[in-house]
Image (cartoon, rainbow, N blue to C red; front, side):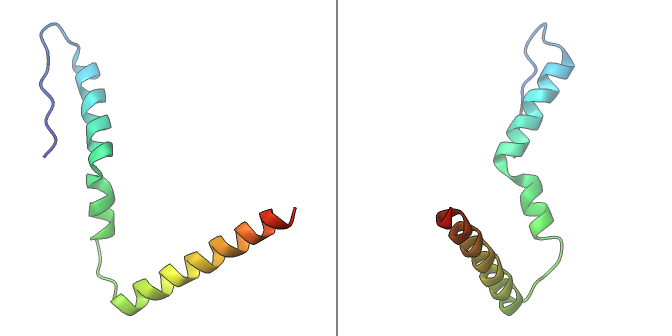
Length: 65
């Protein structure tokens, strides 16, 4: 859980900015999006392999230069 204590004489906007940074750093929104729907393990594996293929092809193109 992300908590931010508002200091005395601190504007609310500044505290909100600190909260957003902590929230982003904790990765809460990323987890929510990831768990929004179920993907079968076989589909996850295919996606992971596809991304690896694209990454390797891109790296190979840059190494040829």
